[in-house]
Length: 383
Image 1 (cartoon, rainbow, N blue to C red):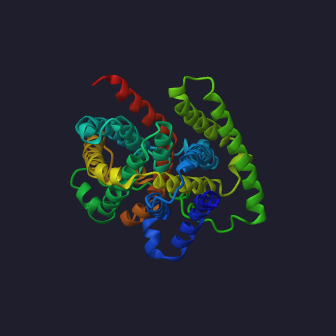
Image 2: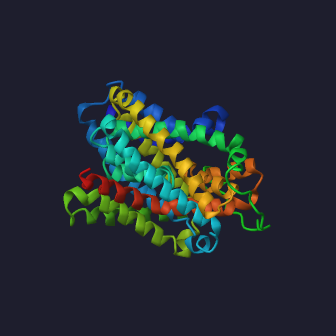
Image 3: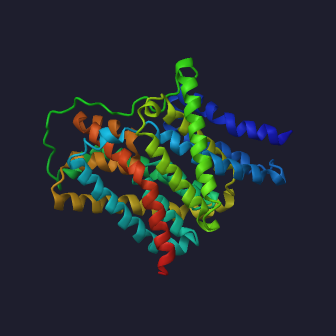
């Protein structure tokens, strides 16, 4: 009876984590992702799983992210956002270049301490600091990263990026103004694409939301099946990468269909699958290996964020990017698009919310492609 109970636990516990975050401001600060990791690690290291349960965990790992990706992409309006970039796109491009250079440099510095999978972590860091957690999950799944290393990398990211966010909303603007020019307002705040409510599941079971959402889920499953079928016609070692990239591409393509894009709460449903993934991967993490690898990975993450900031600021100075634009686009990359409105409020600059979210979404779209590509370049470089 333990196996059916565990399966139900994996499926239903994320809903409990979301409920806890809604009821407790303290738990909400941690976030549902962290709650799921903690619960998974605690459960996975009790020794209560039967010997054959690893196959079920692997099945969850195989299914959750590939279904989550198209669901999260369905709501994108790429045509609209492609018209709104401006100087923010330049700054985000400089941010992306900085992340790639620093992550690759960090690979050579930390690879001996981390071990054989350091090239995978370099790809994951390029992805997560270009777009967000969904890139981390997609790249980790595609490259089949060891669960303990995955959890350690995500935990390290949560810690260091939180410190970075605190810096940005407190003294970041004053520090950057000593190096970069001040923002020049254009007076255009008419379009609001802030991501308020993107983490809210209120009303998801309402008839007008739930039935179309089932259709979106069915489409996501079809896309997943197509990606899975491709693994049968490519070399085995490339199968998961081909599947993830094809699923990402088809999910983005589907977002250009107005009827699909209009379906409400596809992002939230996709995020729920990511929470299930976090719970499962946490349950597979050997805590002794997690503790052993954490210091080196924490150092790698700290190095990446700190050096990326320095290089990004230097490039922005060369190209004449102003302080607020630099901070907002850095937030979109390092901390993810949902936190752009928070930092914009701290800067007292609502005008940059639109472009910040836009560039963050663009990074979200391209992050998996960049991360996987550079990971394999590092693996094959022979250096």
